[in-house]
Length: 164
Image (cartoon, rainbow, N blue to C red; front, side, top):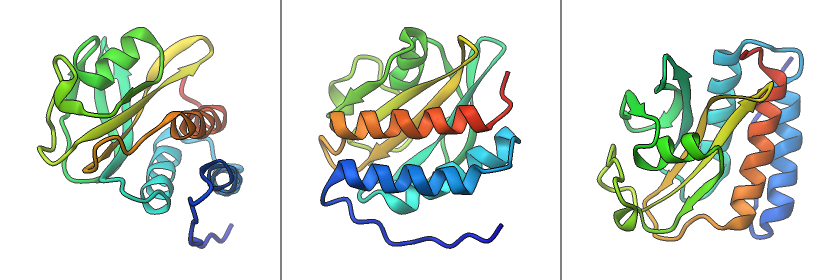
């Protein structure tokens, strides 16, 4: 399969996420390896969304989140469940939008320039398998439209990948 990146216009976020979801479906079609799919998903999101400084995955391994494929600066390797935005989203199994990470109790500053974050839990066969994490150097970069769009992308990733 050949693939080329297309410019993304997120002036209308809902339309932008629909186009991104269609592109991700094509990118993941026929591939089931979770590492390959996570790498391509992170790269697609990082290059498509404006003002994103980090996009990637953490996978649940032996009771903690371990960094997986990502785009951006080096990241924290291990995050305990219930700690930081990623660990809290994982423990609660719900998407967390954090407009100002400095106001989030227990925020883990992997990158001091990060100002806002959104984390989407990955659920496969009813089990938590990890999270999709995005950071921005702009305060309040992410909103509910981003959260719903990223949840759709996370679902496409989980459906395509043999994680459990």
